[in-house]
Image (tube, rainbow, N blue to C red; front, side, top):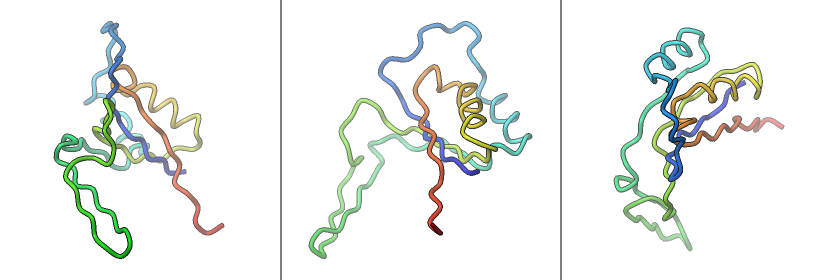
Length: 111
């Protein structure tokens, strides 16, 4: 099952730096096991462009769609047997301590 894992900042990170995981090791482990299909860091929110159409009119604005302290800073596309495995993969990610991770399954549009 495919999951999108949004990697987000958090204004209240874990301050315990003992046994902090290494991102290169995490990537190598999950790429090697076939659980991480793709992932990347994103440019900061100030680089975002928001696109909307309202009443047939194109509205383009600079910046993210929401003003918030948290921001999506990256993503990983995961292939896991189930949600429990996806949670285990996320738990080991360094940003589980420094930020937050949102795991979302891909919708089955054939239903």
